Image: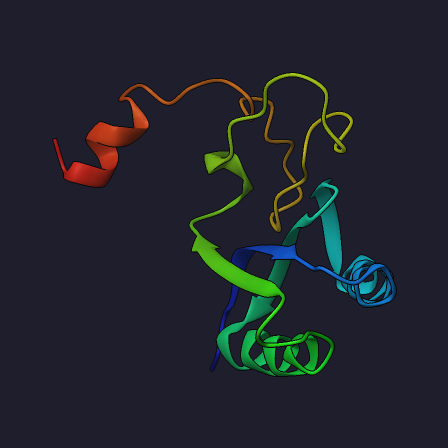
Length: 114
């Protein structure tokens, strides 16, 4: 079974009409983290389908669309003014109150395995 995972979807769209279409489409399935960054929970297959659909909305030589798998919303650090107000809710229904607080190790140590 294809279990759902979390993804950050980010885009940079040159044309205002394509930009609006992309934003409206992602608002149906995702949580806006910033103007062009969404948090989406989907299975790997579902994410592939979503990216194929979103890929049809962009101009390949002018726009950029990316999806980054993340372990979960609790791994996101939030600082300053953001689109998300309050805590994110995990799939288990528990508040992730520590979102926005740095992890015990700096991010670069986690990436480098140190």
